[in-house]
Image (cartoon, rainbow, N blue to C red; front, side, top):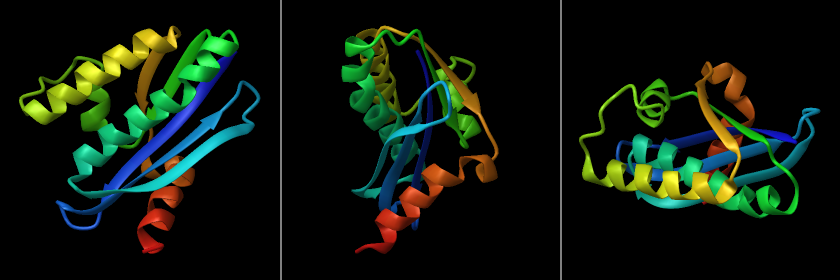
Length: 137
Protein backbone atom coordinates (compact mmCIF):
# COMPACT_ATOMS: atom_id res chain seq x y z
CA UNK A 1 0.00 0.00 0.00
CA UNK A 2 1.07 3.58 -0.67
CA UNK A 3 0.06 6.50 1.52
CA UNK A 4 -0.32 10.12 0.48
CA UNK A 5 0.09 12.52 3.36
CA UNK A 6 -0.82 16.19 3.08
CA UNK A 7 0.59 18.35 5.87
CA UNK A 8 0.36 22.01 6.76
CA UNK A 9 1.44 24.16 9.63
CA UNK A 10 0.55 27.75 10.28
CA UNK A 11 0.97 30.53 12.78
CA UNK A 12 -1.06 33.69 13.17
CA UNK A 13 1.82 36.03 13.70
CA UNK A 14 5.33 34.73 13.28
CA UNK A 15 5.66 33.58 15.99
CA UNK A 16 2.08 33.39 17.15
CA UNK A 17 -0.68 30.92 17.96
CA UNK A 18 0.06 27.91 15.76
CA UNK A 19 -1.55 24.68 14.61
CA UNK A 20 -0.94 21.70 12.35
CA UNK A 21 -3.09 19.87 9.84
CA UNK A 22 -2.51 16.34 8.53
CA UNK A 23 -4.56 14.37 6.00
CA UNK A 24 -3.61 10.75 5.24
CA UNK A 25 -5.03 9.03 2.16
CA UNK A 26 -4.72 5.48 0.87
CA UNK A 27 -3.97 4.31 -2.69
CA UNK A 28 -7.51 5.03 -3.80
CA UNK A 29 -7.61 8.55 -2.38
CA UNK A 30 -9.76 7.56 0.60
CA UNK A 31 -9.11 9.67 3.68
CA UNK A 32 -8.00 7.29 6.42
CA UNK A 33 -6.83 9.78 9.03
CA UNK A 34 -6.85 13.47 9.77
CA UNK A 35 -5.31 15.58 12.50
CA UNK A 36 -5.92 19.22 13.30
CA UNK A 37 -4.54 20.59 16.53
CA UNK A 38 -3.00 23.60 18.19
CA UNK A 39 0.67 23.42 19.11
CA UNK A 40 0.99 26.60 21.19
CA UNK A 41 3.02 29.62 20.09
CA UNK A 42 5.40 28.90 17.22
CA UNK A 43 6.77 30.14 13.91
CA UNK A 44 5.37 29.01 10.57
CA UNK A 45 8.43 26.82 9.92
CA UNK A 46 8.20 25.21 13.36
CA UNK A 47 4.53 24.44 12.66
CA UNK A 48 5.32 22.99 9.21
CA UNK A 49 7.94 20.64 10.68
CA UNK A 50 5.69 19.71 13.60
CA UNK A 51 3.02 18.67 11.08
CA UNK A 52 5.47 16.28 9.37
CA UNK A 53 6.45 14.78 12.74
CA UNK A 54 2.78 14.40 13.76
CA UNK A 55 2.04 12.68 10.46
CA UNK A 56 4.92 10.22 10.75
CA UNK A 57 4.05 9.43 14.37
CA UNK A 58 0.42 8.85 13.41
CA UNK A 59 1.16 6.37 10.62
CA UNK A 60 4.05 4.40 12.04
CA UNK A 61 1.57 1.90 13.49
CA UNK A 62 -0.11 1.47 10.10
CA UNK A 63 3.25 1.12 8.43
CA UNK A 64 4.06 -1.77 10.74
CA UNK A 65 0.64 -3.46 10.69
CA UNK A 66 0.10 -3.32 6.92
CA UNK A 67 2.71 -3.36 4.22
CA UNK A 68 3.29 0.30 3.39
CA UNK A 69 5.67 0.42 0.47
CA UNK A 70 5.74 4.15 -0.08
CA UNK A 71 4.76 7.30 1.79
CA UNK A 72 4.39 10.42 -0.34
CA UNK A 73 4.30 13.69 1.57
CA UNK A 74 2.80 16.81 0.01
CA UNK A 75 3.51 20.22 1.56
CA UNK A 76 2.88 23.78 0.45
CA UNK A 77 6.17 25.00 1.95
CA UNK A 78 8.91 24.83 -0.66
CA UNK A 79 11.49 25.72 2.00
CA UNK A 80 10.60 22.71 4.16
CA UNK A 81 10.41 20.38 1.14
CA UNK A 82 13.84 21.53 -0.07
CA UNK A 83 15.34 21.16 3.42
CA UNK A 84 13.87 17.67 3.87
CA UNK A 85 15.16 16.68 0.43
CA UNK A 86 18.65 17.94 1.33
CA UNK A 87 18.65 20.70 -1.29
CA UNK A 88 18.83 23.58 1.22
CA UNK A 89 21.12 23.75 4.24
CA UNK A 90 19.55 23.87 7.67
CA UNK A 91 21.28 26.43 9.88
CA UNK A 92 18.75 26.75 12.72
CA UNK A 93 19.42 24.31 15.58
CA UNK A 94 15.74 23.75 16.33
CA UNK A 95 15.07 22.85 12.70
CA UNK A 96 18.11 20.54 12.66
CA UNK A 97 16.56 18.75 15.66
CA UNK A 98 13.34 18.33 13.67
CA UNK A 99 15.30 16.82 10.77
CA UNK A 100 16.96 14.31 13.12
CA UNK A 101 13.58 13.36 14.62
CA UNK A 102 12.01 13.03 11.16
CA UNK A 103 14.84 10.78 9.94
CA UNK A 104 14.35 8.53 12.99
CA UNK A 105 10.60 8.33 12.34
CA UNK A 106 11.23 7.59 8.66
CA UNK A 107 13.31 4.57 9.71
CA UNK A 108 10.50 3.37 11.99
CA UNK A 109 7.92 3.80 9.24
CA UNK A 110 10.06 1.58 7.04
CA UNK A 111 8.58 2.74 3.77
CA UNK A 112 10.20 4.65 0.95
CA UNK A 113 9.39 8.30 1.74
CA UNK A 114 9.26 11.30 -0.57
CA UNK A 115 8.55 14.99 -0.01
CA UNK A 116 6.96 17.08 -2.75
CA UNK A 117 5.87 20.68 -3.01
CA UNK A 118 2.28 21.43 -4.01
CA UNK A 119 0.56 24.81 -4.36
CA UNK A 120 -1.48 25.93 -1.37
CA UNK A 121 -4.79 25.48 -3.20
CA UNK A 122 -4.02 21.76 -3.65
CA UNK A 123 -3.32 21.45 0.07
CA UNK A 124 -6.68 22.87 1.08
CA UNK A 125 -7.73 19.96 3.30
CA UNK A 126 -4.69 20.22 5.59
CA UNK A 127 -4.91 24.03 5.52
CA UNK A 128 -8.56 23.83 6.56
CA UNK A 129 -7.63 21.68 9.58
CA UNK A 130 -5.01 24.25 10.63
CA UNK A 131 -7.51 27.09 10.44
CA UNK A 132 -10.23 25.13 12.23
CA UNK A 133 -7.84 24.37 15.09
CA UNK A 134 -6.80 28.02 15.35
CA UNK A 135 -10.39 29.28 15.15
CA UNK A 136 -11.61 26.94 17.92
CA UNK A 137 -9.97 28.77 20.79
